[in-house]
Structure formats: structure tokens, C-alpha cells
Image (cartoon, rainbow, N blue to C red):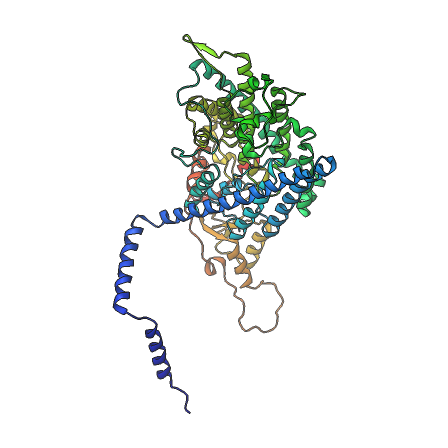
Length: 610
């Protein structure tokens, strides 16, 4: 039997394909209808649909994470209750569980990618400024952060790290951040239908204008404490990296460092010990629910007939802050003092975590203490125009949460976030005042939490000009430009290019017309210079064996493509003009020339000296 010819094979294939595509007319009509629908839907642009898919995907992932975290946290609470009254077993169940979860989070995340530690916001700000961080937006980093963050949050308030890890090219990154906030707090930029942390305050104004003075004082307090926290956090983060012992652990054995720190934090929050003075049995969500309670704890504590309620009842969570050996004020002060350094220490852990929720709760505790003090000083309220308005401590807790978190992160939108997360807008005016005052103090004294982390990690990020003094406008480029610049000429050969590559590790080199006439003509990347060396032979190299393709002996201008210069700076350009160019054009370096001749370069390394 003769084998089939190619023509017969092709005919069989065509017949086979045609047999699997019945009703060609109907299929063509359906395809045409789909094309029309596609044209109508995508008339406004494809970004809207990608953002819709992004929102659905992030909401689904956030829901699954919350479900798993809730199950793991309830398992920890059940284990702690089931061991009975054996103090040793209760201590082991309280400490080993979060230590195991935090250690697994650190080990798993860092085994996938070394970029998964922390909140990711400093790196995200760097990316949005135009810097490309390799593999940071890779899918494996996303998976490592999801798994690691789930384990971190399941450790509960022991570690005191919350969930605000905004899932992360550039146009959608900002939208992705908004999606992250919305999925965490359930508060999109609109009116909230169902608030996450409900408050029972009335819709009318529960305060009088003279009371706004106390909200301004609260803003001053939050701003001052935020400055101290930002300084201590940046100092401790740098000290841990520079210390010989902790630096070695962070470099070689990050899970061990995490286990030791979490063991210390869990031991301090052990409920039969110091934890009973810090409401350590409450979860992160229960902390907020209790702090946003509109009833005065000072009045409730004076009521001796108040019976103890079971843990989990929202109306009885305030009793976790009430201890026989200390007043309400004592437990709140002790909570603030202990959580200040504990939160600072927890930020050094090399595992995926969110840092916004802890400072949010800390600010709510500051506001609650401020409100309880005022409620005890003015038990009948503040009288203005013949009407007495009672002090509402939860209103100060809302303002404190927004003011402190806003001061730490340099954000004013926390005022809107607080109102949306609680469904309460009556205190929006004093909350905004407190946030503005706290932000003004913090921005005057310290860089933000994320900018401070960028400084410590030495990420290539352009800092803002903190000084607006008139003298800063007289600072010109020639006073701060980098003076050590290695340039190559168009006529350079093997030896000159090799010398330039050996002198620095820059990724880009300026190209001048010649050594005698240093007119800037363009730039060339380091990779192209390395390829130039590989394709050329050293003039003094000994003759080798015969090669199929002999090496070239040309010059740089003949054999390499030179990128033209897009922008140049004059040495008399002001600091603010150069800063605006870096910020608007997302540049990393600009070369400084005088009448076309290369002088130096202005680079984005001001963060090292900030």
C-alpha cells in the first residue's frame, strides 16, 4: 500500500477541520455580533474592565484570607481555654502558637523571594517614582505575601501587626492601593452602606464649638507622639541592621530572629501576667470595637453592679480594660507605654505584615485616654450658650486614630477613612482639625514611616524638600551634583572602555565627542560596553589560536549605538527646578553641562542625607 501524498494529507486536514465547525453562517453571524459587543464595551478603554477584575480578585482574596485568619485565631483562643488552669500549659499555648505561625511566615516568604518582607509600601513608592525593582511585582512575590501575611495576622494581637498590605504597571498600582484599603476596611471613597466598626452616636452635632479646642490639643499630642515613634522606629531599624548579632541573624537566619522577637512579645502579653493590663485577650478588631464604644468607661467602672460578661460580647469588651489593681486610666497608659516599644520592635521583623492597623489602634487608644480624662473632669459636659454637651470619649478615639495614623503615614485621608469605617460623620470637623494639626507637627520634624524605611533600606527614592525657606531657592545644581563622573569618548577603544568599566559600577555612562572636546552627545549602557569588550580584542593581547570569526578592532562610536540626550541641566539651575524635573519625569539622573560640555551629573541620592 502506497503512503498518502502531501496533497491528500492536506485535504484530510481541511476536511477534518471543516467537520468540527458546523453551521458556518451562524458562526459568522455570532462572531460578528461578538465583535460589535466588544467594540461597544471597550469603547471607553480596556483599563476599566481590568480594574473591575482587579477589584473582584482582591475582594475574593481578602475574603478568603479573613476566613482563614478567623479560623486560625479561633483555634488559638480555643486551645488557650481548653488547657485548663495549668499555668505552664497556658503559657506554652499562648506563646508557641504565634511563634510557630510567625516563624513559618518568615521562612516561607523569604524562601520564595527576599523581597516579601515588610509592608511593601516603601518599595511601591519607589516603583511609582520610576525605579524598576527586579522581581518585586512578580507573581511569586504576590503569593509569598498572601501566605505570609495570613500567618502573620493569625498570630493575633500578640505580634500586633495588622492587615494593610496593599496588593501591587504603573497606572494600575495607585488603583490597586485603593482596592487594598477598600477591601481591608470596607470603606470605598463614598458613603458606607454597612460600617465595619459601628458607632451608636447620634447624627446631630454631639459636641460644641468650644470643645474643638480639646480636639486640637489631641492633634498636638498625637503629632508629638508620632514624631517620637518615627524617630525611634527608624533608629531601631538601623540599629538592628548594624548590630553584629542581629545583623548576622537577619542575614543568615531570619526565622530564628523572628521566633526570638515573637517569643518576647508573646511572653509580655501573656494574660495572667502583664497582658491583663493591656487587654491582650482582645483581637485587633475587638480592640477597635471596644475603643470606639460611645459609653464612658469611667462611668461604667464606677457602677459596682455591672456584671462580668463573656468575652466576645461587644457591650462587655470594655471590661478587658478594667483591672482591680488599676483604673481605666492606668490600663490605657500602660497599654500606650508598652505598645510603643513593642510595636517599634515588631516593625523590624522580616516577614510580610501591615503597619497601618497597629498605629490606627494606638491612635484610638490615645484618643480614648484623652476623652476619658475629659469625661472625668467634666462629668456634666461642657456648657456653651446655656446648653450642656456631654463628653463623648469615642469621638476622641476616632479623632486620635485618624490623627496618629495620619501623622505617621503623612496622610490626611485617614479622616475620611475613619468616618467611612465607622459610618459616623458627626465628628468630621474636629477629626479633620486633629488630623491637620498632627500632620503639620509630624511633617515638620520627622520623615514619614515609609520614607524613613526607604532611608534605612537606601532605596533610590526622591525625598521631598522639607525646607521652604527663601534661602533654599538660591541653592543651585553645582552645589550638590555628583562630581565623580566617568565618561567615555566616541573614539575610545578597548583599553579606554575597560578602564571606565573598572572605575565605576554605573549602569549608564555619558558619551562625549572626544577627550579634548567634552561635548555631551549621548549615553550608553553598561551592558553595551561589556558587549563591546567581548567583541573586540585587547591590542596588547598575545596572538591566540585561529578563530572562525576574528575580533574587531573598531572604536566605540563606530560599533555601538549611542542613546541621544533627552534632557540636560545647567549648573545654575535651582534646587527646586531640578527636584520638580526629577519628580515629574520620573528620572534617576540628569547630566549637568555648560554650553554643551559635560560637567557633572545630578542624581537622585538625596535620601541618603535626609
